[in-house]
Amino acid sequence: MILFVTTADTDLLTADRALAGLPADFPEVTAFNPANLSGDGEQQAILDAAAKADVVVLRLLGGKRAMPEVFDPLVRLCHEKGTPLIACPGHQEWDQELVTACNVPPSELDAVFSYLIRGGVTNFQNLFLFLSDSYLGSEYGHEAPAEVPWEGVYHPDEPDGMDAQDFVRRRFQPGRPSVAVLFYRAHWMSGNLQTIDALVRRLEELGANVLPVYSFSLKHNPEGDGQLNRTFSEILCDSNGDARVHLIVNTMGMSMTDLHQDGATFATGPQVDYLDKLNVPIIQGIFSTGKETDWEESSLGLGPIDTAMSVALPEFDGRIITVPISFKEEVSSESNGRHGKMDARLQRNLPRPDRIDFLARLSVKWAALRLKPNSEKRIAIILSNYPTKDARVGNAVGLDTPASVINILNALKNDGYHVTDIPVDGDELVHRIIERCSNDTDTLTEEQLRLAVGHVSAKQYQEWFGAMPQKVQDELTEAWGEPPGQVYRTGDSLAIAGIDLGNVFVGLQPPRGFGENPIAIYHSP
Image (tube, rainbow, N blue to C red; front, side, top):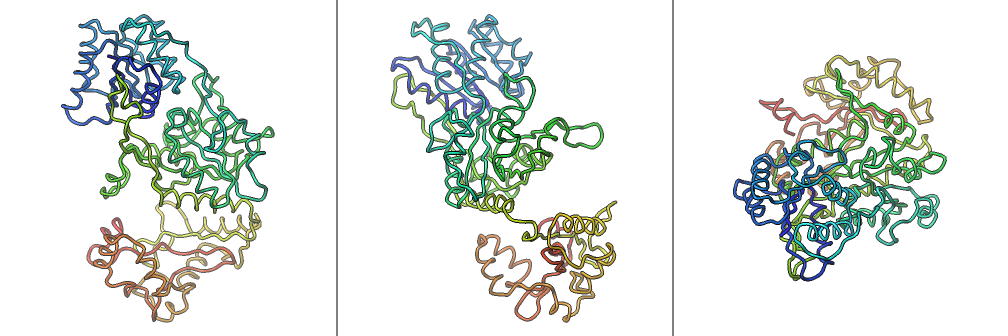
């Protein structure tokens, strides 16, 4: 029996597809992702399997820390029994602790690592054939690790291997917003593409040209020279170095740039210059590592790992963070029904349709802005206002926010945006907002509410309110009374504070804190 332990669910999916194409008498493969195991009992299952295995292969992102309770006992077990143990890292850099744990010749370790890092169904098939021939005494025969593209263009309706320029020439229609969808190569190799396919289809339904691109990483591939990989230099950009698209939807985690951490943390490295030159918005579509039900039931939403990888770190690249569009769910094995099938808990990324729709609509709107002249674009600038007092309009510790807004307004006007009647300075800006309508209920008059720059009718509010989940409706009603409430209400509508400056609206953040505990309400709206 072959024991395969990996921290990548896409490895398990690839292995399952690979085994489905091997001979019916091929030995059994037992596989685990330690991240999907909970409790001592499930962790013990890895050791129980290792005791019966003829060879053990580990592929661990994060090294031995990926399975802290089991790693050392597993190494001892394999060494005591003489079971071949091959421990590989989950990325391209060697991990000395893993190498030290191995008890096979370096040439065999290199061979297994080469199969794994190149990946794909064919390489996994030959990996298992190699393991069986080398350690189980079979004579199936196997081929050396095959080259697989580190990056490339994918589309559910097109053959693999299409050149980016040929793809654009074949599928793009002039005058339409163009969107690239960037995703992990591992999804392409393992067939874990349902979410990508759903997003591509929805973008195309909304009238966008779509360029789906897979890549090993956001930085460089394992065989690169440390320079920016082809994903950015040749696929997303043309031969002149210009972007082929108006916007990129990125579903890959982490930061593309390096992080400077001596003092203030900020993005650095050659990727910063590349992003400046690329000059297109990048929207983050989140692939959650958890289940949809856990996300729905949690008051926190995304867990700490997802938040770090898909929210916090991507923000250093200046990405626009959106919503989770995919969750992991257990699926059945493709190798079921064959002798020696793979015994594993398989998880696949499945799309969340309403969030796919949200992300697609947002992306098309952002991309369409690239086709619109600046003079026709409309912008809202929202100032902080907590607590909701006139003296706190634009409040930010150590910053002169109103003065910054004046600088932004002048810069927008210089860039061709339709901006009129710009206040002379920050003080004038704040006074004009307060005079029109503010959030300060201590001084607010009915005349100000009536003359506010905007109003939301009770009918419109009721439509928005009715679209919210029942649980949210109940909480809002308990905190604020029957919709639309009485705060900032004038007649049958709610007043909106702010001023119009042509195609730019400068407003105040919606007030949240009232009652006996305004701070609690502010932080839990």
